[in-house]
Image (cartoon, rainbow, N blue to C red; front, side, top):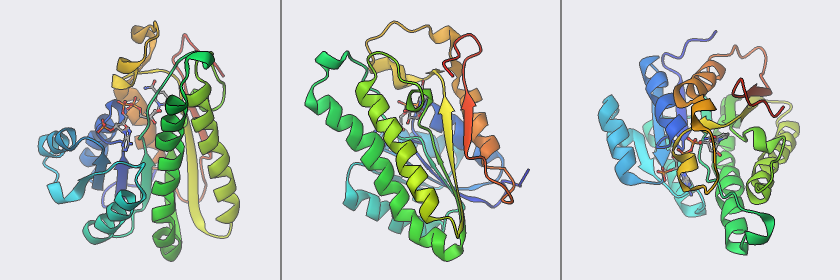
Length: 238
Ligand SMILES: NC(=O)c1ccc[n+]([C@@H]2O[C@H](COP(=O)([O-])OP(=O)(O)OC[C@H]3O[C@@H](n4cnc5c(N)ncnc54)[C@H](OP(=O)(O)O)[C@@H]3O)[C@@H](O)[C@H]2O)c1
């Protein structure tokens, strides 16, 4: 395992259920962090609770190209070139196909797919210059095996997988590694706005999901974990 200490890591979606737990673990491991989320207050609470400097954080809507560009600039100034970029930002709209509005569909793609595109694209030049880097996306199991009601969500998450596969081909001659983490259901605020009967007690705990990313951040650079799947023991879709 590689040491986390001194590793420069950007976490997007840091204010979410999994993100907060991950930031805590990475901070404990001595990583140099830059954290981002959409909600300024949640971000302030997170950095304050861990004693991270507010200058190592920035609230950004990943749907906005100019905000993502400003984020990249701030990271360059405050952190330098990241060794690792973790993208945990995402929204879940789960509705039957006929009930999905075009706004539901567009906002799923805008946040989960276009947001991921803008975020990853903004850090590629610096990583290329450094000739190394690790990009971790979290398409989730629904980015591999769809379920009913997940047309918009799965479209966005399958999109990430296809987009990353193409990027891998482009980056073949560099040492930039890409990992896709396929998580099953995690008991986090993600489900709070979803009108679906779910058994949260059977889901993966936020800490456990975060620990899988913490583990991925420490993989030796001689190889690449291209995919990892973590599912609730009693509810395996793959
Ligand atoms: N929970 C699950 O069952 C599960 C399973 C598989 C995969 N995943 C994926 O794992 C990731 C994290 O999930 P989670 O459970 O931690 O969800 P969560 O608690 O709902 O957190 C989502 C995060 O995404 C951020 N976000 C949403 N829209 C954004 C935007 N437009 N710009 C910037 N940030 C935005 C949120 O920011 P604010 O809170 O600041 O608004 C928050 O930090 C998501 O991509 C999700 O699709 C989740």
